Image 1 (tube, rainbow, N blue to C red):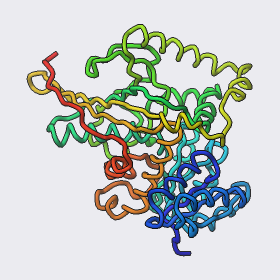
Image 2 (image 1 turned 90 degrees about the vertical axis):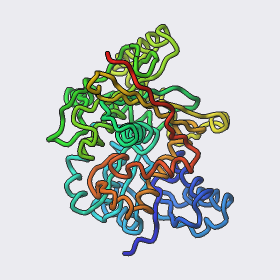
Image 3 (image 1 turned 180 degrees about the vertical axis):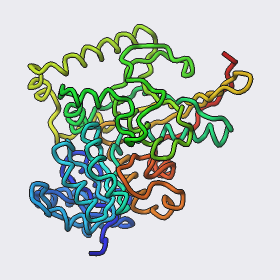
Length: 418
């Protein structure tokens, strides 16, 4: 069966799925051929009707029906498209059949997962076959982890190619913003970290747990849950809630890309704080929440507390949502012991949980669908269980800038010998 569509949105009736469809209707129809897919025809038709209101050309958008509980029920959907955008989570429960169909039937796949044990299971089960079939399975293509993964590659590449210095370390510093975490993201995090089995805890604590089996060592230590002063970034920092996923994705990228910045390259994340008091206060709350999360008697309470999947954010979030971050690279010292620091600034005028995430995963999918020849010519991975940086590299940066995200170099400084 020929590939009729560039991208297909699986889970189009969910909140993020609907936002992806809105973006396609607003910015890409009819240039991009796309379809929406899910279980319920009536619900999908409502999403299509809304898309037609945005852009009448969406009358030609396809509707495809599938059910992950029935063997082979996704096959026709996957056969017809270049890239499946999997917007339905949590992926531990709902993602496996979609990945399986994509690997078997040779369609690329992107998702929004932050579920580390599931990602590692998928790698074990499908990586080799995906390499053989030249299928790209790309996890974590939303706010977790495109800003981190592409941001780290962006600033490290700048230091190496423009400043002619070897980057020794990169740190992502979440600055703040306004918005909310998507219900699906929170559910993914809860699924990944609230199961206290020894094997799950061991996997979660290993800083290289997503790396290929023969490449699981390096300078990075387990995540820090305290507060500290980060000299290169000139700020106090405390734990960042998405770091357990983002850091592992970035380290896997470096391994899959062949360690372009050397095997001693280090990566970490934190949230910038205005002073030591705020940093220690947030760190304390983070540690307390971590302890409470693992208490089995409270599991039902946490599940009840999670926002309902499928419930859209309010108009206030849509109007005022935003996020910003700095990504700081520090070089190896030169012969005199001096280092160089370079900083990139990343921003979006959309909230991280829903609107920004929807645009990020869409641009990743379109990069795979429309720029395949460029990605291949650049030597990027042509198949396997990949990461954003190892699948689309810096090609996505121009797409993100065109989508009104900021990816810019803020500064570079020569530091005194220590």
